[in-house]
Image 1 (cartoon, helix red, strand yellow):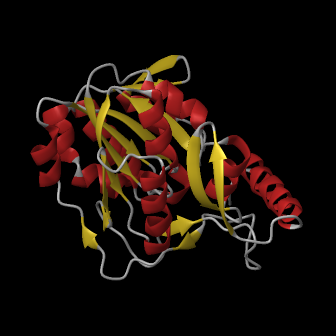
Image 2 (cartoon, one colour; image 1 turned 90 degrees about the horizontal axis):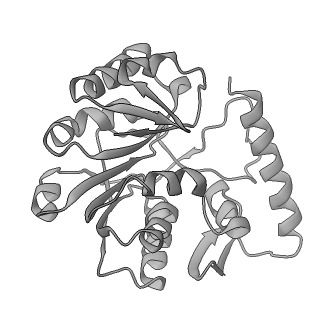
Length: 263
């Protein structure tokens, strides 16, 4: 069961969506926010956040950006509509190249429009791939109008992953050149599989990482595995203004949507 505060947030988002839908009947809308152009689904948590605020989880994005202090290649795993990559590319001129990984075809179509509309096509490569593992239950959209929406167990809805191939990490070696590496991981329960797929990349390039950890969706051995990879590579965990050793990962109480900067 999800934390009470999370259920309240989803309920509030659902109410706001219903209020907006009285005046805006289209589910997909074209908007401009903070000098950025978006095509979003307003019945989706991510799309609604962009519609209302011009971004999604922007506070953590800005903190992560502050750790990217030299020219870098950004690997955005779980690109969704581009809310992370587009905002950080406008915010931080050290982002030289971006690889966005997004397996779901409906997200991919909106993502491609958003990248093009913000004139980022020369900087961004979009790949319809998955990193680590994927199955028919993996989430990719978070609709607020689904009649079967259960606030007690809400982790979005499965995407369309037909004929999607696994991401080949060799593209990182091909594109990185003299750049540093930064990685954002937002994969709702597939964190351990993604880290495992990137383990050699982490060992070689020691990227700064933004990891959304969803402990409620992971097994205990998944947490232990992520902890071991971070410890082996001498990572520290930044949570707010505090810094923790990597072996403290399993001690954090927040079970869902725990955003950690790893450096």
